[in-house]
Length: 132
Image (cartoon, rainbow, N blue to C red):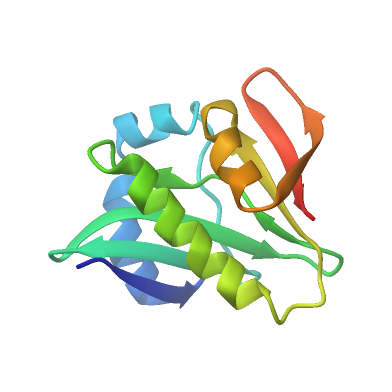
């Protein structure tokens, strides 16, 4: 059974859990070579199964919007992990008054559309989407 942890962007436990992943060349390749960012304005949703980190979604809490960006999910159950993480984020964001946007990798566009996101801008590798 997968568990979703919610940690602040500067929580020491966050570094212990995702540090090995965010420095892994294969995980960086998944993120098209872009580094993962965190700080006091981030909340991380981390999927754990059998004491292994299976994926994560960092959510940046800006003044005018909340942004999903630079997420990751293990290949074996990729769609299930992203779906579960995204559902948790959306449940938490229901009470927020801030708009929710996401910078989505093009292969994941359909999942975000199913969750009520709409395209606002497209690039070669990414799509900016807004929760309707």
